[in-house]
Image 1: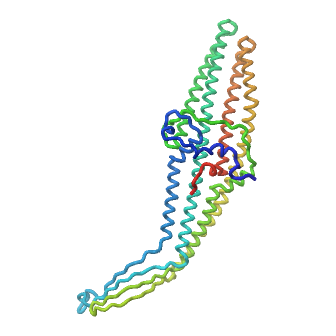
Image 2: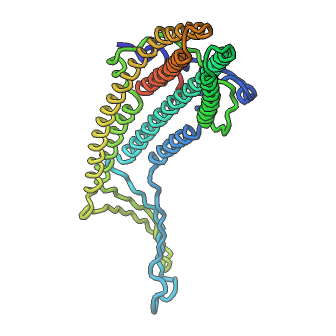
Length: 428
């Protein structure tokens, strides 16, 4: 079993500097600055409108607690009897004026139950806020990796262009020497043109990934020049069961535990609402004819003949049952997501390691040998083109697989909630 703090080594490394960074506003907005993942996360947590909206919801529910804890207001009653009648009651001389104050007394602990319910509703909003922040952190982290991968593809396409140029010049030299047919120079020229087109496409893809990332904190066009990512090789993959234990405690499930408590509190309040609330009255009556005064005292008590709040109680109980079922559904969904993501994590790790340590070096050696031999006529142009494409495909596959692996790590971190230890400070 591993602790939440140390469950996933990458989480701390990715975001431990998030709140320790102290860049000035000028540095943040300076065109062409190098963007780190920690900086990107800080920007989105400060500027993303979804975060602000979730925080406003928490503030609104704080206000609801204040309102729920308030007592019922007293009522002022004024009444005049025996006015503007006939004969002796034609004027106000025999009028009777009553001024009274009535106050409803809540029974059954309604105010405390109402306050407890509002407090739990606020706790639910807090969990939703934490889940929203984790969602954004994971989304931004994966978008950041997309930018890094796109940058690497551009570099690779630039290398591919250089290789195509080398192949073209080698073919051109052999054609001029009369050793091969001019058709091979034409083929090499076509490969060179294709490499240039692929480079332009990679650059456009990079620009799209940069724009998408910058939109998370509200920039219509990215102000950073490059996304800096220090690759951390051979990061350990925690055991599945340890991750599962953490995933079953993440905000998505913790929210439902609180929501079930909230539904129970709502049912308790509805049962309390079945108890009628009496109202007491105290006042003074003025007799205009005799100029005398008298006090009045009254008590009113609703008679629950027709409305026993049965429908509201049953509704609350059904909503409680629904919340319990939804909690189980969320647990099953998270288990399934974790299982699928863990499979991607482990398989992509193995594949990326093989590509990096075995396939790419072997393809690079083969290409170097064939390129050198081609200059001296030991290999055909078809051999050169095949090894060149094989090397390029292996490098592209490594970039894609490494990006898939890293994004799977971020998905695991989102499911386990380990970001909360390092990024989410001052939780509500």
